[in-house]
Amino acid sequence: MLKQWCVALVVLASFSVQAEKSEFADIKLTDFKTGNRVTVGSLDATKPTYVKLWATWCKPCMEQMPHFEALHQQFSKQVNVVAVNININENRDHIQKAIERHDLSMPVWLDREGKLAEALGLVGTPYSVLINTDGNVVYTAHDSDDNLERFLKMLASGQTLESAGTDALDEAQRKALLEPWMEGEHLLFFTATWCGWYLEDSRPEMAQKCQRVQSELNSLQKRLSDRNWQGVANHLWTDEKALSEFTQLYELKLPFRVDTGGVLFSAFNVRTLPTIISVKDGKVQARVTDFSDQDAVVEQLSEL
Image (cartoon, rainbow, N blue to C red; front, side, top):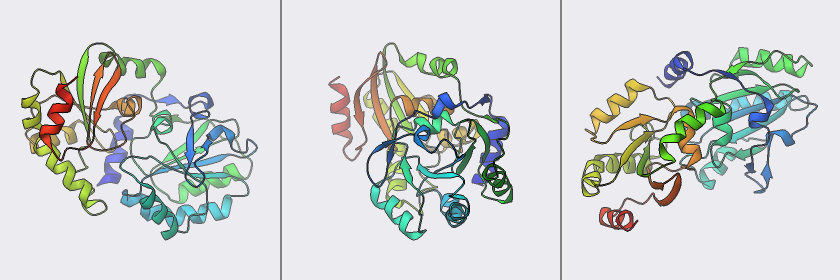
């Protein structure tokens, strides 16, 4: 089902731009092993680059890891290969176990604020991105298949290939999506339409937390009814139909929108689901990720 959603989202995406080097090369990431700051632009510029965006709770990601490691072993002398974790609902232990389970030998980096994912137009993991020596994206895919391997072979043999479109937004589009939150006071509730069911096997505690918080959201909103609420659904694997089914399932009263391009998640650095942030004139005044005591949540948000 997730593969079908990914394909549908690519087809239905309303924005498609050429991902130029300046959009992502200097975005600061974190090396998982050393904690050092790294960038895609710091890699060997004489080689093309293969970036794979992934998450430990993503089933297709884990299924693709043996092939990913095999591709690294095959092409690492000719191609920079990097595994970039998207850092949503992650912790070091889960990432370390995934590295050990699949004997991953390529560098593993963390996209701590989701900025690389945003710049590369991520709409669903796993997401493979091939970048030529000019620093331009030439191929993207959710599948790890013969076609991906064919493009890797062409890049490894010295072919530059033509730039390809991605679903990344340009600066004007990002600004327009952020503009409503740059003035006034808002309570933004961040979640994902899939966190209550997709994570049941891989992260059961997280799934249960999503289910509970979303079931209690109407009550929380009622207790803070004087605030300007907005629900924000993570855009990964999510379209308007999925959002509608989600709001009906939980009978949610507050307005919800899909976070187009992951702009709000990135701008407000939301990496845990669910999260509430209080925003005033574009600045975060408070952040809530612990919903175990609703009275405490109400007190914290009422003090602002």
